[in-house]
Image (cartoon, rainbow, N blue to C red):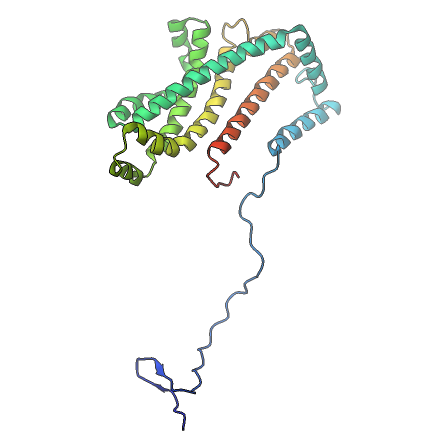
Length: 296
């Protein structure tokens, strides 16, 4: 039986008979070579345990080297050895512990009241148009006004006692908490709201199952900024007619040109700020373990 050659129809595919060879594929232009088995890394890479301590350790090493080599005038900035010796003396006399405890109490109270008020205001403004119209404007105005500029008015209202100091810290924390929590809360996809309405969820169920998971990343961002704001506010209020605290200890040292005592206070502020931020990061990683981000 004679094989038939493939006949091509005009405008249609070629028809092959049994035993006929398939038509040759049209030649293709050569493309760029593709490397097999290799992949370009675009992310930041793996994280190291306690890797965030590398930067502070290098800074301390540079400070130590500059002091030991004589490039750093001890009258301007005391060396690490002098600072450690001064810190030991302050601990031995109990002066450092007493001031640290008072400062921690002020910062803790201001942080607590600021976090609670900021979150409550963010939820009220994010879940209600009337709440947004009443709350968002004044808080945006407060955001533009530094807490230092409000000190004369707060002193006039509250005096120079602990109430004024805690209020200044709480105001700074509340603004940070409100801005970030409100931003993430209002960016929740409206389809989740429609789904909650379709499932006939109550207001409490809607907040627990939709609002809280959606705004939790913003809450932790605001909490980290709020912790920093609490320490910044503490530094300010403890140098205004204070009789105790780390800031008061530093202010007294300034009058006697004791730079080593001032640096001890700065190191204490830095340690507490770094440790509190690390604690918030650890809680955030555990609470948001379902997320896969560049932070790891």
